[in-house]
Image 1 (cartoon, rainbow, N blue to C red):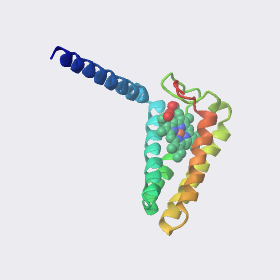
Image 2 (image 1 turned 90 degrees about the horizontal axis):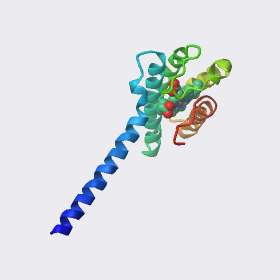
Image 3 (image 1 turned 90 degrees about the vertical axis):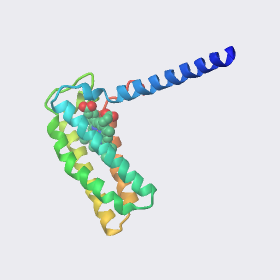
Image 4 (image 1 turned 120 degrees about the vertical axis):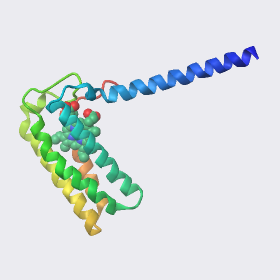
Length: 158
Ligand code: HEC
């Protein structure tokens, strides 16, 4: 009896520790939500939507329903042109992962974003015309990665 009470207490403590760890991980990922209103907050919020759209495109491919990639690809086409306008010179913050080199290499940064808009448009066309959505989205995902590699800081825990 005593033992099982102790075991239960230990299990409960372990469960609580686990859920606290999860909670703090979620909090670290959402640190941007504490940012004051302004371009830094807006651009991270916009990119989070792009992330959701990218996931929806991936899910459509995995589910074998590539036509479903059209709507999220359209969304990326609409969102990305607004992204560049949310980088006033020198707008960095401890809660932002934007690298300082963005402003020194502005033309290249814009070129990456234009490339993504065009690549997302190609995903939407392929999805509507029964084209090769997989190939088009592979090209699109490469552009996410290239821009992040050059212009986004790694996560603290990466
Ligand atoms: C033109 C460059 C560029 C392109 C292209 C780009 N990103 Fe980003 N992305 C950034 C930058 C810079 C940040 C960090 C912004 C900040 O923290 O202020 C970011 C942040 C994010 C975030 C927010 C969370 C985090 O980890 O910082 C997500 C999610 C994201 N990008 C997904 C994507 C996906 C998916 C694509 C491709 C469909 C993409 N991005 C394409 C530059 C880009």
